[in-house]
Length: 253
Image (tube, rainbow, N blue to C red):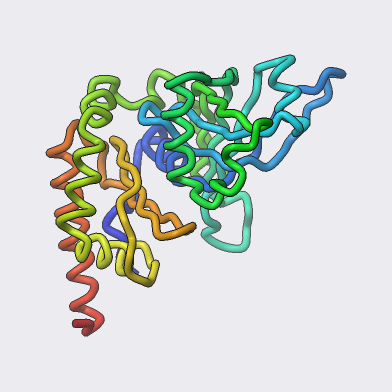
């Protein structure tokens, strides 16, 4: 199946960002009160600036660890390319976690829920809260013996582009969902391999966009980071052309 968003060779910071943005799960490593490292499964999302968002229960051991020692790391793992697990792309991010409250916390929580809509069932329970981790450094491994260290300043996207797209996001979502539902359907079906109608664009950032249908979410990574709403428009036009080309090659109507 053709995927317009894939590049053969990408800089490590670009490949690392793609892994982080597209991850539905990650391994969180924290430090217990005794100093013992502790690893657990979490479900991340990302803010526009690549800050990693976590929705954590205060009843969980890793949350209590972060409340006492905010240092942590996250491991994001890509799809396997063969039988050797060491050839899977992966990125380890180090940083410091902090709880986010108030209006900012509510906004980021909505973004996290757009990535994990099934969590609406427990999103309002009082023991859950939104946390964020700003990447300080990353280690990207593109495969066996292919490791590169990436400083946080290189990993994070351009701040001006992030701000421009964040300001335009609501208008982009409204326009795409109201005027281009058929285009969304063909992109999701042919490029992302997800069947069914009713898909909607749920979020967009400089590196790609998320589509949602009920509790299902699919991500389209852009071929390159965009700078503004016009960049999103051009990326979606390219994706639509690629999707329609794939449809024609398969003889679909």
